[in-house]
Length: 499
Image (cartoon, rainbow, N blue to C red; front, top):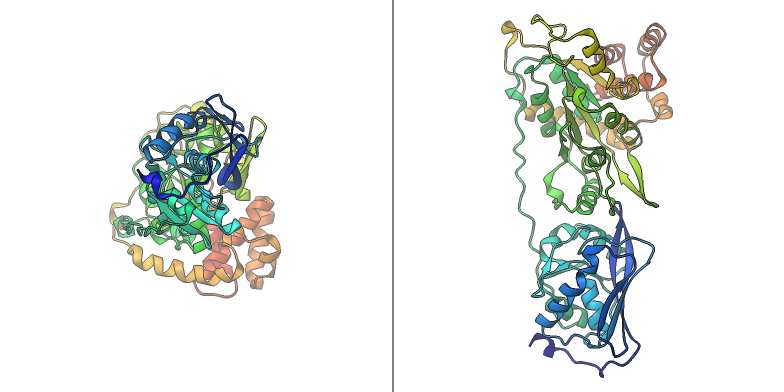
């Protein structure tokens, strides 16, 4: 049997102890978790303590079968496994592997060696992927110890700087690593991801809308498009991904950590995330949370990417207002049953909506909606949420005399990436420029005067005033200009259409 490869210590006696480190997730934050095993007493009992949920408690049967099938003798005395710190809820099957290794260490089948392990065990000892593998890699990198994960998780976790990753196919291989007699398996590189984004050249006409999309991509600005059904709002939104700047290494790791915390596998090569939840999604699905375990919602799964809300007017107003704080601050804190978790949410919000329930308000086609129905429909989008959109533009029906093929995605991408290179030196997207930095950037006198006149005449809020300045700065960057000029401000103002 496989277990006979190991040099065993003396038979265990009452009070033998073993410990393996794992990782516990609070939201997307990974914390070191000590999995401690104690063997003592004559009665054959296997107990788990430390706030385990039902999936963790069921690890007793999986671990016992995996240990036996891997060629080891399972201890016949009382086995107690503690998951510390005990005040953090433990959820899921990710602790199977560290529990098994801690029991084998306590039984003197393995030497005590500092490692981090995470993975679900099959009954025959195979190691399956588990939620939070990126967290295990981060904990191992902080502690400076090897990290044991399932083979299918290894390529993703290997992106963590400083992580010493050991992909393990089964419990026997993991035991050999802990014993120091196993060879490191090769980490299979992730499959190349072919983006296959639809081309902007597919959009006929819509010159102003295409320009708005380019500005939004360059500065990361929130974009609202409204117009009748079939005018091309969704087509435009889905072509935004092809012109966005690429993720840098830091952003790619942050995105992978969020997706790993949600139990989703994502390669750092897969580009920026694009999430498009249906308008019937629950509030928890949008902002995160859950019953027993706090998992990221759609706004966090779109971190460093795009959150696209199609048919914005169909979303419940309560759900939309819950997005105001996370998209403004770039993170949100969710609290459930005395446990709080921080979820990152630096997203670009893109939304599309009809002007009324039937969609034809203000069009040549007759609108069938009553004034009360239109008011109720528009009231779902509150003023504070509307004020957070940097760009608001109308996407009308095509004029038969203006149907022409526009620029390709490749041409627009070059301009966007060139503009992105200009503001990377500022350390943030133009969308996130603070007012003092906006004040310090060069403006012409005519540009300041035009913006001041608009501030007086239209009663802009402070937020709206700063958003116009940020959009003006992006337009100047797209034009390769150091100073914001009057024409840049005028164009920014033209994208504040009252829907």
